[in-house]
Length: 368
Image (cartoon, rainbow, N blue to C red; front, top):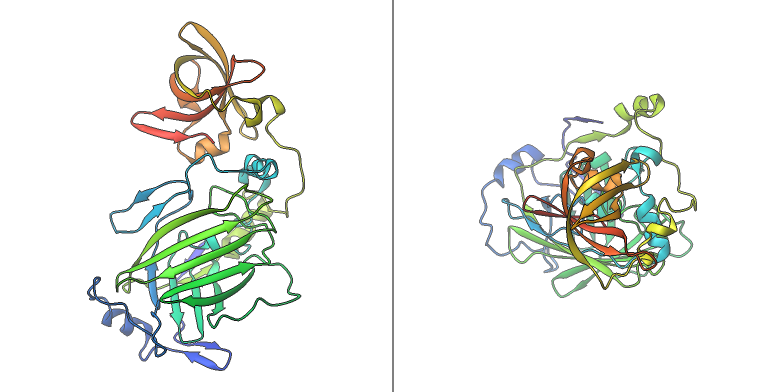
């Protein structure tokens, strides 16, 4: 992928209206570099909060994490274990970009939630519309904010059918008719074509934008899930052109990036013996032991024999693709290593353990 500097578009033509800054983008950026973050939020001619500007967001590749960054951005995650349905658990277990490709690597649209990470985002707004300009792949979304009904007979899409309405000073964007192929974040949490997404935006002061979302998806999750984030106003930042296919095309043709195809209904990579339903989730406990043997299949599972307190257990350590994403490498779990982990025993065979979390130094890393 490559980024090329370009002039920021200074006018966005909307149906019957034009959004355009009063001065060139660079001058406007310089003018607004100094501001009082605690001052009152600016307002539109209709009295509603104006969210226009560039917003720095927390790097939320995995929305189950909770953290606050030094720049003031933050993420309050939905903690593991997520309430997967059997279908949702299979999609989560089977997500393996090196093996099966990832739609982002094939330059497909990111969809709403994944678009909020990682590159800059500019908002432009007037009384009737809000425009989301994502630097990532030069994507954009235009949302009417007048409380209009959802469209009829539109084909499902990556961003779905999005309609905005105001609840006081809170902007609510309601999204339906998604194609089910987008992920919630880089790590690959799934959603289906049955997903209904509701996003809210509030600007309590000049410097902050509060972003919350709730996803109701009965095919994937047994209850609604959600997330809260804080964005920080960053007028010194300008978005750039992002030509995703410019360098990716050759990498796709050469096989350096696995091309993404719409997923099929393939069996789970996790056999029945190691599925969560085969374990007693009420008997979670902490184990410390030495690895006797370890098998690391990058496309499937990491399995080990671990001797703990004089007893040998068969342990499912996790899925390598997920462990690596969260910072655990094969060498850290190899033969002779001493591991500390929280795990649950098998219902049929208590000597089978499936790891819930690994303890690495002072860190607790989720294996779910």
